[in-house]
Image (cartoon, rainbow, N blue to C red; front, side):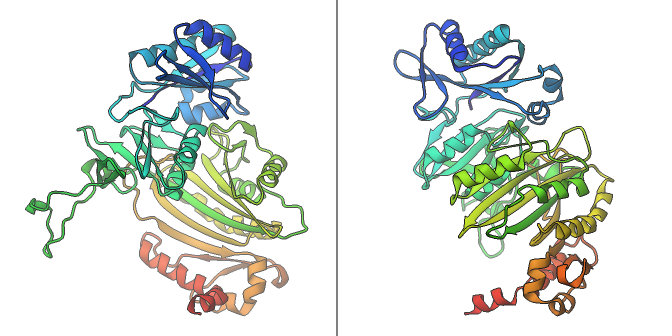
Length: 476
């Protein structure tokens, strides 16, 4: 694992200021810019990498500090604030260098310092990248000893550096949690979360299944010795279930997961982020406060800036991240995926709202959300589920259940395509909103939503009923 520090400074740390601070703080090391990036590398005479520094990121909201580093760090941080992160080799030399850089910056610019856990060097072998500990034929391994692991520029760049043939694998202690963006990025990139079990082994942070190290593939599902009769089933298959730590203490809150799809017609100025704003208003209260391409989120909420970023990247797909104010309403974080096809922009919003036990009354606001999204013209389809989860929206390496499907909704454009009779005569009875020429329909899951398989089957049947043209294409 790397040893990380974050200097939260009160004055802008320009490149020249950072470079001079490094030269004075670590005179025995070579300081050089990393090609193609804004990073500074610190190397020994033999070329070995000791630490890498990312110059200051201006934070639009100090609440990002609380979300990623803890409320104590938020209270201690200056306002305004810049985030200067250092990743160091986790030996005595690396830790001393990282600590010295952070102290020198705060002494010069004012502010406070955060440090990660002590880390280890168990898997660190000649790292080719500041965030990487080892590269195999099929995996890029990054290790982090942090309470909350964000989807940082370090992780994103490590994934790109590994190339399309390698999956990202993230190794953490069992005490670590992932943000929604880090969790989703690992899953969407066929990645893996390897969690230390405290006894020298590892398990999958999503499934709880034991893992072992393979020099070719990286971490893989553990394969028990077939001679061990305790792991055999009656038909002679080798079985092994989740480790006890994964299932013993499930989270006590709820993650309300909402997935909204919006198609912005060609020739019409897209209003990005409106769907996220409506969902936030109905399910939490306050509007989003910050967005960015990585975490920490450095930009104040700005739909026009988001659209400009999407146009700059077109036709490539772009993923953005957002969060709401941490101390107000129910905590929430989200991701926005943007795709251009023939001038038509598709927007996919995934938002997770964290709820304490007893706060599930917010589910009654789903009707309002569907109605408002339809009236605003930003509802194509909506899927809603809930899982066991921490109220702060982070993902812990524990069993969160299968999840319960709560309902689906379709907006006016889809209603027009399938026709109002189809919306009224399917397997489920829906709740319509709006006049017939501008109708949205919400289909809540039937009966006991704690029966996840039953609810999901019913919603899938309704979805197939509403998409006959897709069904015909699939058969053809």
